[in-house]
Length: 96
Image (cartoon, rainbow, N blue to C red; front, top):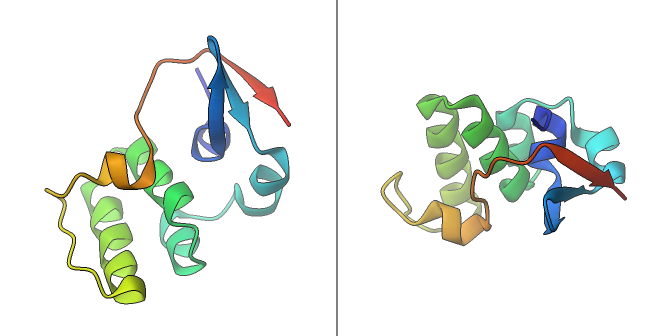
């Protein structure tokens, strides 16, 4: 199972392994979901909210995203497609 930091900074997959952006993970991995969103790291923030399974975190990401972009997304919007994040079972990672 991937750690939170590995999951939120996964940039792709190589077969059964997640490819992780190590530089971003080291720099931003300890930030909470809201801080990631406020820094404009929306994909990472959305991934963090998915990892936490906390609806309030998802709502915060959507709220901050809407303010930053002038959008009017809701939790019913296709956020997985927008941010390119889909929860998958991966047991190993490749750190770049």
